Image (cartoon, one colour):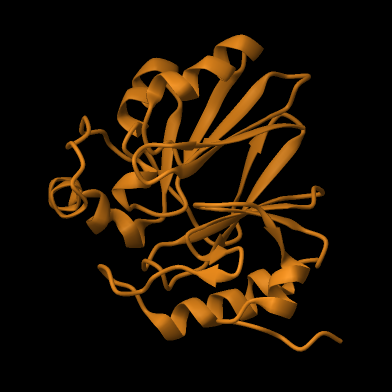
Length: 212
């Protein structure tokens, strides 16, 4: 499986491109900004984007979505519990000091335990509320890889003081969903360096489980 993760925008959101190199079908996760930076590897590899998915609807994670959808004609996905945040793009831009992005639509709802196929691979959706009501993490089935958005970071967890955040929910989501993945699973957070499920279970100061 092809994977390229790179930071975009003022807040350095981790945007990821996942693709089946045989069929050339690709998924883009969290296209927060810098459309040209996202399009370049897609063009170089001649990938066909079949889905644009979002871990949540904070502006730094969807700022380039409308333009990317226009260029690729791919469907956009978001959990419906975050639709209200997507509609608050203007207010988010004002709060975060960002330019208001082109307004787009969300085509498809993300649902807990659904899967999105790209070639021979499947992206499994886990609804993990807490950072936002509709926050989701994505586990690439049969691959030791999870895209955790702003739910889980290397040595940290997502903030819960913005719209709809809930500290108890995010801890529950991490304990009951993410920490039940195989410890070898590598985690791509919404910002910052990669980590692993096992490392966070043992050392994360906010949500730590005793190693068995």
